[in-house]
Image 1: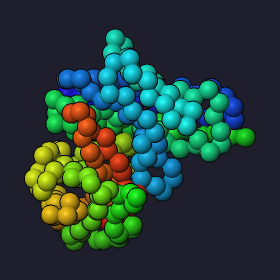
Image 2: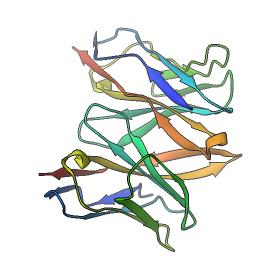
Image 3: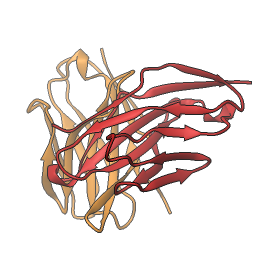
Image 4: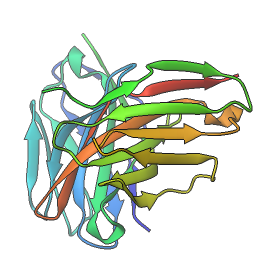
Length: 113
Length: 114
């Protein structure tokens, strides 16, 4: 079945450091891929998405490229800020399974000044 | 434009009781999905509704049920509550474009079962 695997946390970085959060997926069809962010006590916010191979999603300095050959969608940011501290979820939506969403377990990021 | 809204924000119940959670989607979105998020885990899919019809159901017991109303709002009902039902319940509304779906989440309802 469809699934998403993302790197274990927590991740702690200093401000202005480079961020990578790994995400790989297994899907039956041709999924869309997403990154969501969750701040403490809040729901999930859509951060970025990509709907086909080689697409790059980007938002607020974050980027992720849909790599079909490696079934990956790693999240990157060149220079993190304290305000980026949150939990990040990788997710997929597969047309074969009726566009049901599958989420990873989340990666907690803490950025220290 | 208003985002997805959910009520109540927090809820405390005791074992055996039932609970009703409510969700209003983004205007123009016809599909609503429900998720359970246990502390430290990713959201787990419970139900999806589109145009008042159930489109998908996750691996949850029959104690969980839902419905969607003509205005596309939705209710999630959980009967015979167990301690393990304590979680954040998230509602997401979605639109479809070119066969692809994007979901937008509400702030969630925090349910505590004592």
